[in-house]
Image (cartoon, rainbow, N blue to C red; front, side):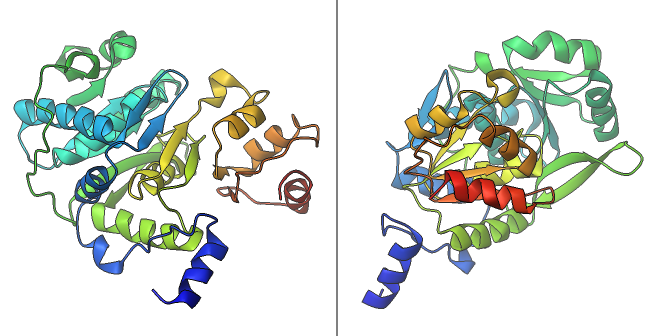
Amino acid sequence: MTSDSSARCRCFHPSGSFVEFKKEAIEQSIPERFEQIAHEYPARLAVKTKHQALTYDELNKASNRIAQAILDQRGPKQEPVALLMEHSATVIAGILGALKASKFYVPLDPSLPRARIKSILEDLGSAYILTNTKNRSLVKSLAGTALQLVNIDELDNLPDTNPSIGVRPDYLSWVIYTSDSTGKPKGVIQNHRNVLHFMMNYTNGLRICSDDRLTLLYSFSVNGGAHDIFAALLNGAALYPLDLKEEGFTGLGNWLKEEEITIYHSVPTVFRQFVETLTGQEEFQDIRVVRLGGEPIYKRDVDAYKKHFS
């Protein structure tokens, strides 16, 4: 890298440690890219919530145990695996575990109306679901005895080595359900190559690197949440999930400062509710990017940004 290009990188990222996401890196799978990152940064923080923190090595091993549980029961064939858990580090391990087992995951937020969850499961035709002890009874009430269930909280004795079963770039990675004009849930499909192509542009556009700390304020069951998850974990950065339904907005400013968040991402509605809690005296010295998407942005949003951020 020339001195000129190094200077440009430092302009975009204070640490000067940005590494370009190469185009050839999209010709692999999400687990392959993640395992490379975990090997490079085993002791670096991967995910931190209010109750749990996992390094890349710990997250990789947790996802490997989940993958092994899936493979033991279902083998490596391509099929959907539904995930029904709350906003947590555990659900991140579940997503990676499903992908490592060559499945495509279908995220289900337990806070969704039960009728919507049941409709998605029926549309999906999936008989396999990952959940935890907290949500086990909910799963049983929705799907009955026909469902094959794995409790993520009961997998401590399984092997934690990489399964390495050869997931291809054209394999499906997820189906995320959104509501169309009729209000009926409709599944949107992505494959590994498409996700990695998006992550290449996202990473290089925002200069995301291993020194970054990204919010996960979206539900993991929507596209915005999936983008935040992989933007962090495929670049060696730290992911900070926060459930605003439980935590509210009052402490969000302090949380951003205490955790030294560098990239804030939400819909404009959430941003507006957040800035209404600020006094104007706060200093967010670590935040270098505020990204809003998914809804129209208005001049008052830009004015609020200028008022409260550098």
